[in-house]
Length: 177
Image 1 (cartoon, rainbow, N blue to C red):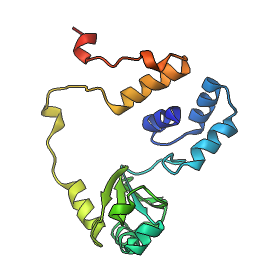
Image 2 (spheres, rainbow, N blue to C red):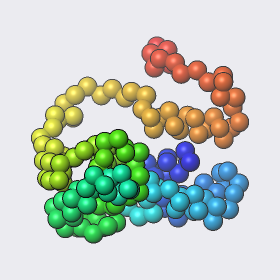
Image 3 (tube, rainbow, N blue to C red):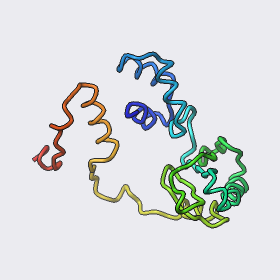
Image 4 (cartoon, rainbow, N blue to C red):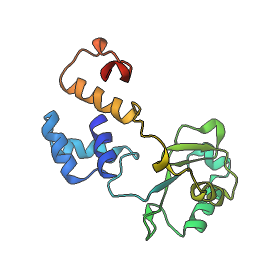
């Protein structure tokens, strides 16, 4: 799991090279790694666009008219399921349950869940995505401890059989005084 996540974070998808490397690291066959990577829909077998639009089509969402959301996304992007536009900006996919049944229908944008979007959700989301943002290059460079850093740390600890009970997350200022 964590190594596949790291590989996808690095390459944008699970490449054949990543599968070979992971199988060597943990001592299982490439077929076993590929079977895990292909079982979970969150692991992509091909590169996706900058924005991955995942619309839930499970029974709870379907009852709540997820088909309207799916049609909105398809009409706005011009994409069919599992397609990416020519600019590599949007990838559309319809997926099984994303765990937001209470707020159905649901859509995810790069795995961030939006519950109960309007039927014109694609246009609403696109406007938010294309909305001018703060120029981050003018902000001070601060590198917080991100989920990716924490996941890498935990993956290394597990690989090295480090007793997880002894792991202590410290303040970054204690590391670099």
